[in-house]
Amino acid sequence: MPPNVSTPDSLATLARVIESRLPQNGGDPDASYVARLLHKGPDAFLKKIGEEATEVVMAAKDADFGGDKSKIVNEVADLWFHCMIALAHYGLTPADVVAELDRRVGTSGLEEKALRKALAREGESK
Image (cartoon, rainbow, N blue to C red; front, side, top):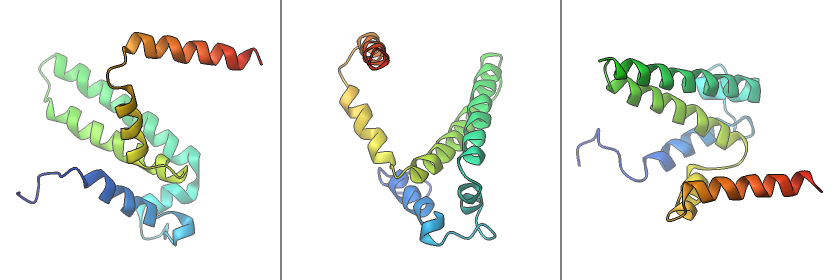
């Protein structure tokens, strides 16, 4: 396989690198962008997630009018990367997200949404 082709382990490998940058694992904010975001706390990386999500939307809208579709891929990669920083901060991994997606396979999106709303209402009534 060429070196620039991702494998199923690419997210796990990146997750391990991000985890190594956590403050409790010795991440140095002076030497690492990830460690710097983690050192600043959730507001820093959550702000980046919001910015990157907006950039995904803008790239997609541009593509609708003839813009370069590869920009969508670049922006989604940035979004996923920053989401992975949040996952690591909260002790979660991409595998947790994949497991949730696997759980949803075969479930109607409309049914899933209705179930989440029902559970939220149930939680509010307690």
